[in-house]
Image 1: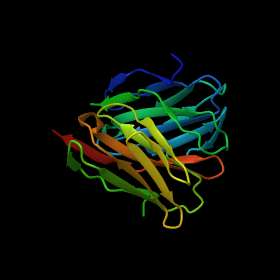
Image 2: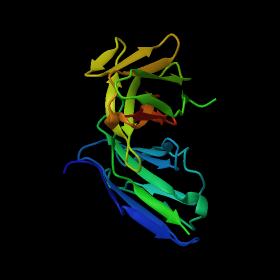
Image 3: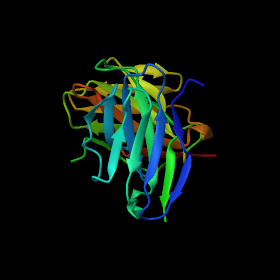
Image 4: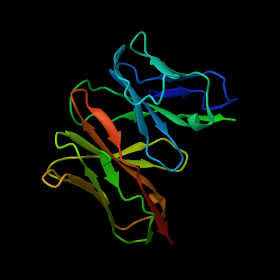
Length: 116
Length: 110
């Protein structure tokens, strides 16, 4: 398939552990977004990459969250010293648009993180 | 005030009914608009883009009112399979930052 791929699909971490979530965007897509979705809520913006540049990280909830996209394709969202409030679904989305309009996001299946 | 606001619902409607959702946005410079559908425990999927002139896709009609800063989604002849959460999405800013509403839950009842 040519869609956005995320792994792992599910992750259970003990409080205090570090986790790394991976996103493979659609090939050639310039823009990549990470979202955090708590139960019953809409996705909340975390960070945005244009190619390898992280242009906006204003949504990262704390300095325990770190994202990278070193070669402008695959991205990793890392959460250090996980806390229970980090439990959520983490969605990755990519878009072919850099600044053009009417370019929707294509989402991965998400990674469901549960911190115990 | 949130950038994108929706009535969370739930909207419980009988099969065959017509139902409409609105979504308001605060950034007047917003440039593009979408409706996404999200099924329980699944990722959001694009339902339709929203164009200035309004657009229709089968039983679904989307409209944009820039003056009042809202978009709407109308679903005609509701089916059981339409039961889902409908997310309003707005893109704005130089790099087209994407902001979601909290979603409106629709339950179509037999």
